[in-house]
Length: 404
Image 1 (cartoon, rainbow, N blue to C red):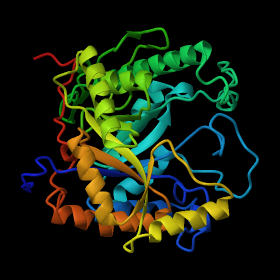
Image 2: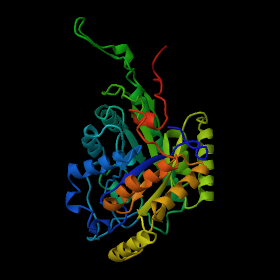
Image 3: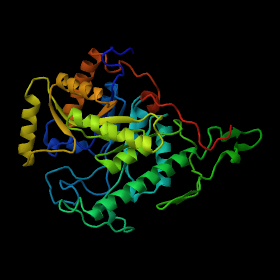
Image 4: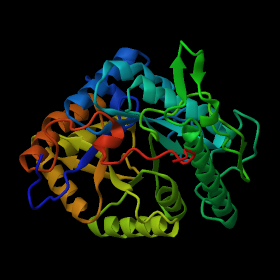
């Protein structure tokens, strides 16, 4: 597809799937299907709709404790969605029923092992024939740590989130996440692409010389390798992370393929992109492709004012005004297209949209926003690649252990 001169690079679009939507009262809407939340069919329907809209990928939210209206602690609310399925397993279930769209489950690095996650995402890449990704999260929540009993995390609340101790904890957790990503990437490379011979006549199934110990030794992990799963179809599935400030920006710049950021205006978007590019250069990756996606919560309706009215009604059901780390957009698909293209000029290469009410706003994205962007020459009209890396314009990387 040739883009218009005003938009030299077509946008990339993803959707973040979480329960019935990002508004806490979304489950009470007629289209929400709360009784289906724990069924495979519900998630298949959502991803199929996203694929109908030619989106690059979907992310699946996940965590290691019940959802909460509090930032750092559990709550006792019974009027909001609580409970979820495992994101990696949802993605694996949906994969054979889709053909093109990328599947990016969330994994909490703080309390999981990189060896297990490396083979789970490698398996997802095989099941999806090259459409797997991974969203890395860290957790500073004490109640999540208490599920595992392997580390002590102090209680953090609004009053001590910016203390020296909290900043030190944050830096340590993100340093651990960077090591985690490095271990995962090395494990994906621990099998060379042609390590499997499968020659019945000679009785050789693998070439043992093409399986490699990764011998990772760091402050947080000691992993020998090799993986038990051969190198994934993409070589390296796509690694992503959400970042709000300097320490997470360094994780994005040094370790990921996509960073999700949360600007609330054009100038802030420019500043954030510059910070991430500086972190990328400091990590020695200035010449490597790295996408920076803007996150937005979206309430979309064709009639001006209808989305804002719908949000206000949902706020009334929830009992408080909905706010988010990301900008909350209420308006028409055309107005959202204007905003996305303006922010693209600020340096963002794509967007991850969080539907306020999935039952309403997902179709508003795929059937309203996408055609609007296509009319402007700013979004694909057909899938142009068979892998997630291909859709994102990322080459399949060489294996770091292979000898030429």
